[in-house]
Length: 299
Image (cartoon, rainbow, N blue to C red; front, side):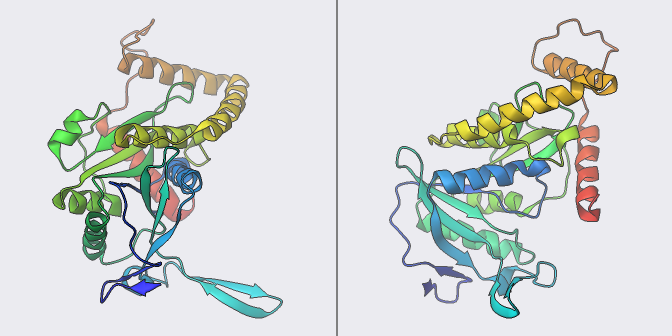
């Protein structure tokens, strides 16, 4: 392990020579409905056979009164303390392309310092594209493909992406700060967000995890097998269909969501103007804010 001068991180070994690696970002602690982005990152950690590369200094970035370390107690013996820190991992996709994964807890402090440090490291490692992942609750049906929205500080990049682009003011996570620091460093930075059916926002939703991985791969030119996630999502789809079929109110709600989805995506069917409404930006923001309040209160 080597400490990089006064920089707040430790390198495991030496920084490797990589071939234009893609940096994929998902840090826990901010909005992630259904844990979809966390599920996508865990899939990437496993699929890329990633290893530890860099640990960021916890005393610099983490408030351990808010995010306490874990004490391992074995038969009364305090065997060790496990400190949760932001980390960067390195691996390869199915075709041998280099991939960097920035994961772990979102920093509690010094966000600009953290973001600038990550951007400097990304530049040193030859990163050309960085992709963040998240998920938020949305008025969408589980019977349709997972919707995705995208963000980028670069208007040209945002214009190029064939995904939903919203206009709304919402509290930012560190991934948004990283988008700016990485863009300033000349790296294409994109945020990918999965839209989670609001009625499953507190349970795992592997369909969204798969959608995030696949969208990241499409944008970065990577190859990652998502068949395991797709198999899980198929099993869940059957269970959700059974639950909805057994409750007329749920079935009615789902039908309205399907009509709205199909109207938004160009398949109007038999929709009448007053049947239902596609959620407005304000309604989406309200859903996000309520989700955040529920997460903070444990509701």
